[in-house]
Amino acid sequence: MSTQAQTPQPMSFAILRNTHEVLRSSIALMSELLENGSLDEFRQELGDFRRCRNTHLAMEEDAIFVLLDKVGDGAITEAGLSQEHIQDHLNAELLEQATTADEMARAFEVWKEFQLAHMAHEERVMGPLTMKTAPTPPERGRVVQDHIVLPAIAFGDFDWYLAFVIKRLTAYGTAQQPANIAVRVFAWGLQYAATAEQWNEWKKIVQDNTSNEIWLEMVEQFQIDGEGKIPA
Image 1 (tube, rainbow, N blue to C red):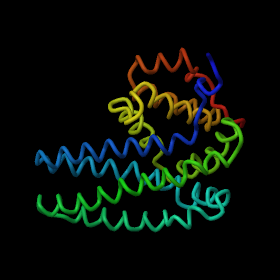
Image 2 (image 1 turned 135 degrees about the vertical axis):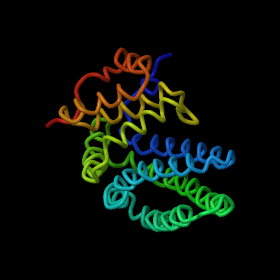
Image 3 (image 1 turned 45 degrees about the horizontal axis):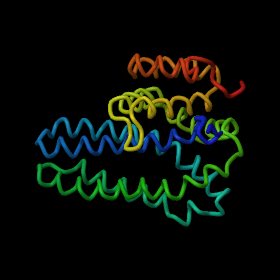
């Protein structure tokens, strides 16, 4: 029996969730590199992680956190998510300052455990609230444009961020989604949160950083090569 619930819908807020999945795969990769003694590669991956996360933080702080606090009667403030960002930054600084392999390993464990717990905490608090921002997927796309996409663009590193996320979703998928679904969920959600002008540029980045197989599947089934859905 076919139901509406079984029909895929664009989920623009998945931009946040699937970025978390990219960050989780990056943490797993860092764990492997550290165990193998590949410290230079570890530092490079940590740099890429923090660069991706900086754009992600621009989406949250003074942006979507404010709106979700409003629709959630102060739930973001009560949960202390911004304070957790401060602690995460301090943990990351200690990790970057480590000079020996032993110091790095100890600092990494502290940073990793806090970071993973923080992302899970955000998902528990924020996930239900995103559905309260607007009643339909297209309307939530507009919310994401205004409260996530535009702040991320203003931060100034969005193209790099988008390429990195698509590459990593293509390489690793997520814990719940194979690569083709993980890329589609993110890219389709972004298309519904993009203007025609924005998507004209960003779909090229998506195509260049995923596999041809995944791209053609998204074109055939979800018209990912079409227009952005936010009216100019």
